[in-house]
Image (cartoon, rainbow, N blue to C red; front, side, top):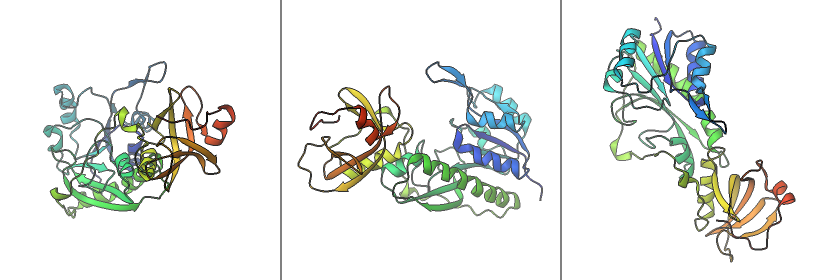
Length: 312
């Protein structure tokens, strides 16, 4: 069975394992479409997306249209004449002209168990909302937002202390393997399509800065889930004496706190202890604005805190 001619569309690090697997398995990737280079960092220098860098390393043609729906790119797309399009965290909504063109489908790697967590930030929200399992879905795209038929799906458990970055990397690898299986099934005509159950739809909207602000009047477990779901980037945060304090790792314990939520109670071997609504949060890794990321223990060596300091 001949491998289909594939146009790959992806941008961030999540898409790298999928492109790598296609290359390793000698699939003819006829081009890679990724987002334009963007200014980043303090110097605001133009930075190429991770997928572009890998594509160049693999000597693959790279296309970076401002908008894939523009006529100028659609002409290029038709000239490429892909038999299949593979999409992994590309970052733009695809027009019908692209979705309907390849006769073997437009396959998307989505890091959730669809129909749960449709949208831009499924991995983050899965952890923030306290889920204990998630997975990867390969779907055949339609014009809706993550609403296409499910081709393959694979579950995985979420470890109690696993954060966004760790789960992201695991799902990227898992998704790449599942993609290859789906391509083989689509090529052989053996794929079984499963429409999504509309009654089970939930959404994972794009993260905003305010998403990461910690409300210390929340339950301790919910606060820790927020911290895990945003670590290492963009990171949950609070304020300490008017300065932003990012928090990367924490634990929680239910109790009956007598202090105002947000109060720094003490330091223990578990970390800096902060009162929450129904217990305590132990801050383990933190970063004050302008300083390095460090353990709470190292932070306290150089920062004296007034008794009963309240965060936020």
